[in-house]
Image 1: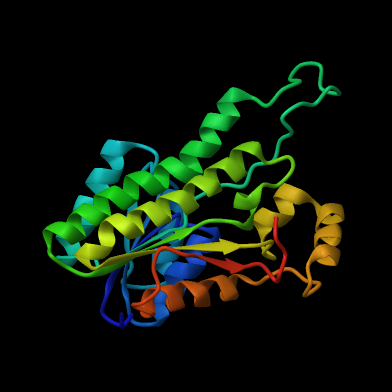
Image 2 (image 1 turned 60 degrees about the horizontal axis):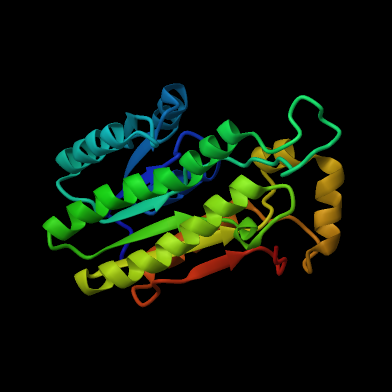
Length: 249
């Protein structure tokens, strides 16, 4: 796939990985549709990158996602690729005897994390795949997973959600491959961005650096370049590309 001129949807594009990926794709000449519930963040993206199509929506709401994908398809006339970058990092132990008010993992938090990291991928993926199939068009779906899919202590919900993303990727690659639609997951390790620092704290990050063979955190640009590779290499599908400096969860 040549990026230039392609119509690409990026979820979670108001910030974090999503915003960086959207900017990288725009820099490569793609036509980008940015989806996120953060309307202010989308407005900032539009001011920074002229020409991006922005649509605010709740990516965990089936009707909202359908309406947003319909709007993108109507504006661009087609959808060539989807990058599912929406998500949230969450850490909480399964059992915490020191917390008398909440000794076990909160169920509401579990449901919120799965909705943000897994249900959003399912909803957007199925709507975009339907458009591609109806258009008889080849395309690609890239799902942002995490090395935490292998199981990180203290991340029951987040790890389960990202493991689900990896499973969806492999299932969809088998189902959609005959239609010419590729599906790839990218699993970043610990990346040097605000979300990582806020979620883990500096003491934990120092230990992670010591355990990582390359002895450092990753960079957002390295994730973006992997997204471009996944989109451009049309014989890559059904796999999880690890971008983690050699660290395995």
